[in-house]
Length: 370
Image (cartoon, rainbow, N blue to C red; front, side):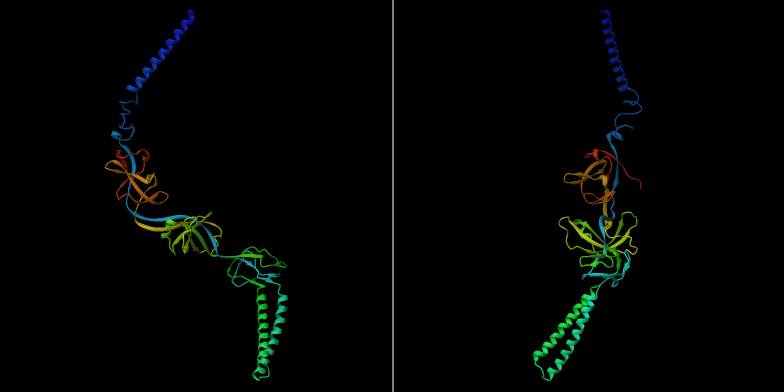
């Protein structure tokens, strides 16, 4: 029993000693230890090295002085590259293919013969029709002479003339069908891969090959409707494609007369020279579209803008204190945003400490070096 009490007594004494030690240590840390209040390392809130970075609780922040300058905005949009002219080569009549006169992937000229369909039957029909037409022409001429001499009636003369004109029309019809057996290029361009062979049977539904004109190329794109009043014909723009850092010049030549109701965008079409066929139809295009230049624009860094329920606001420094200013902004670039109302030239807009700033709080502003 005595040993048990002795152990209890040692535990109580040890616990009490620990409590006394902790109380003494806390007093030293709070009263004059290194880094504590009143020590040389820190002289309380607002002192050198203390919270706030300035005397009397003044917050030190960064800011910029807003000055009017010219703003040439560029709108970044995407579009697609299309061929200037593109068509699927097809036949107008059915028949066996007798010859193919083009190389796949080669350039062809307008009017160049591409393919020839067997025309033996049509040529025979043409010869027969021309013989009948010649005979009918002689009969019509003979009937005309007899009619002048009143040797035949008016009816007989009209019949002979009608027979000649009918056979003449039949000859012209066969000649037109015969012309369709020769397929030519409707315009100059590059022809693609052929889908037929010599000896195959061609129908009007069969696609022989694709013919594409790629110099120049068309570029289709759209801009939001709020920029509709800033787009004009003959506007110069820059185009780039994936896999290349080169930029190509293009010119707007057509604008859709109405805004697309479903997307609220305005469709535009530009044309770009493509002598080396570097711009391939169907490619995705990145477009830099220049908008109207503003000579006296007020721009602030994007990090200075604070979204609020009914718009946007910024913090400005006036007489060493923070002022909240509601602003209206429009165009945003990578680093800045255009302010249309709320700020005046010479205002100092704060760019750091935005989340902790309050109305009328004292601040010390660091301005960027010139």
